[in-house]
Image (cartoon, rainbow, N blue to C red; front, side, top):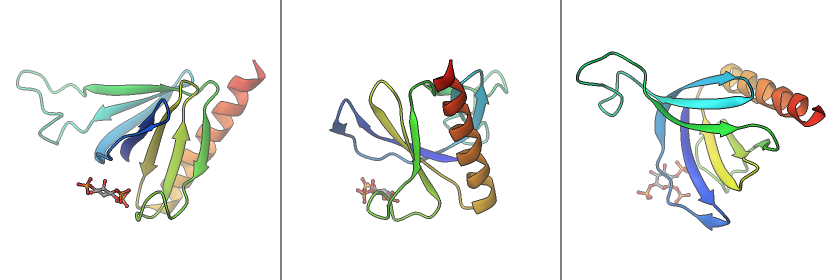
Length: 112
Ligand code: I3S
């Protein structure tokens, strides 16, 4: 998916969209650099490098409004510690699946 951070502690950050492989495990969303992109390619190994993680406990997820991005199929993820991300993918069925699984995960974590 494509993702960018948009704000941190209420402060707006300049968008920097980049492509990543996304894994959800144990209530944590991890973005990995695409190993095929120059940023993800390692000189010695073929490993998929983790870029950053988002703890879903206490987070919120919504479809982003048009004002947030001109791209289609954009999700807005706000972490409990006040960092906001946009997540985007052109294939609607795939981003919709992510929306559902992230929503369900947040709900499950809130029940604990
Ligand atoms: O919200 P903005 O400022 O329209 O976001 C666009 C910019 O971040 C732009 O980069 P520059 O900061 O170099 O202008 C990005 O290339 C665009 O992708 C951003 O807009 P979208 O609508 O694609 O999220």
